[in-house]
Image (cartoon, rainbow, N blue to C red; front, side, top):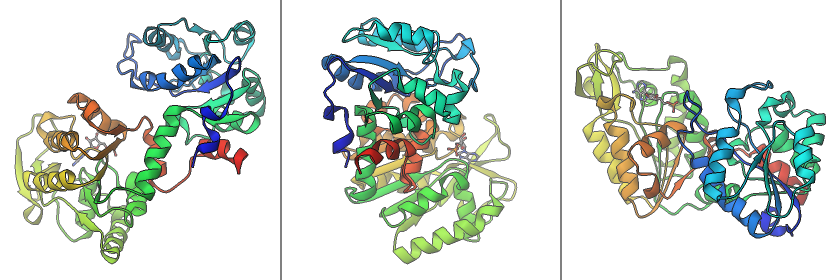
Length: 397
Ligand code: AMP
C-alpha cells in the first residue's frame, strides 16, 4: 500500500531532507520533558537518514503558541534530548524557515542535523499559507512526513509542502499506517474492541465503523451510561448524555442486525459524589440506586471483559474504563491494561488517557503497539483518510 512513498524509494545521499516529526511532547513547569516517547520513536527514521548520509532538517510543532514566538514553547528541550539520544550535534535555529535557518542549512554537510524552531511560531503553519509553504519547501529537496500524530491536520508542514516537493512518509508513520491498515482490513480474529472514556460523541464514529469488523465491542467509562440508558436502565446520577441516546440506540440496533457482540457493564463501582475520597460500593446495572453515580466498571464486568481480551487475537483499546485518575476508580482501567500486557497476540492502544494509564503501570513495553497519534489514529479507526497521507499519496496515483 505504501510501497511508492517511503524513504526507501529515494536516493538520499547528499540530499537535504525536510523531516516533519511530531515532537509535541509534554513539558512540566520547569520546561523539562516528562515523556520523551515521541522523540525516541523518531530515532529509526533519523538513523536511517544518517546511514544514507542525508542532510537532515527537522521540523515540528510544540503546544499552541498560535502563530507567536513564545519562549515557553521553544523546541530547545527537545533538541537537547535528541542530542542525548542520538549522540550527535543538533543545531537549533532561532527561526522557522527564515534567515537563521537558511544560514545553517546552506552550510550543511552529509550527516548533519539542523532543527528549526517551533513551526507554530509562524501563523502560516496552521493556516497553510502559500508563502509559508514556499519558504518551508525551499529549505529541503525531499520532504519526509514522519509526524503520524499530526497527519490529520491540514497544516503547511503536513499537506502544504507535501504537494510541492518530492515526498514520502517516514518509518514511524509507515509503521503506524500499516498497523491500522491491518487491523481495519485484515485483523486476526477474534477481533475485540474496547472503548471507554467520557463522551459518546467522540467515539461514536469509531464504534460505527468497527461494528462490521469486530467480533466483540465492549464499552466502559462514562459513555457506557448513555448506552445503558438507551436500553432503558436507570443509572442514578451517572453521566448520561441525553441528546446522544438516539445515536446510542441506532448503534445497538445495528450491532444486533450485524450479529456483533456488544457488551455493556453489568456492574459498577459507584459513589455519592465525584471525589477521590468518596465512599464506594459495587452495584449492578439492573439495581442502580438513584443516589449514586458509577465511576468504574464493577468486578463482574471486569472478569467478562478480561476473558474476551485474553481470548482475542487482536484487541484495540481506546479510552479508560473509569475515573482512573482517582485510585478508588482505577481498577477497571488498570486491570484491563494488565490483561492486554499478558496477551501474546496483537494488542493496540490509542488515546492519551489510555496510554497514560498503561505507562503509569510501566506496561508500555508489553503492549504490541502504542500509537503516537491520538487524533490521527481515531480518524483512521473511524474509516476516514488522513490529509497528510493523501497529500503524499496523490503524487503517485
Ligand atoms: P475521554 O477524554 O473521552 O477519553 O475520557 C477520559 C475521561 O473520562 C477520564 O478523565 C476519566 O476520568 C473520565 N471517565 C471515565 N469513566 C467515567 C465515569 N464513569 N464517570 C465520569 N467520568 C469518567
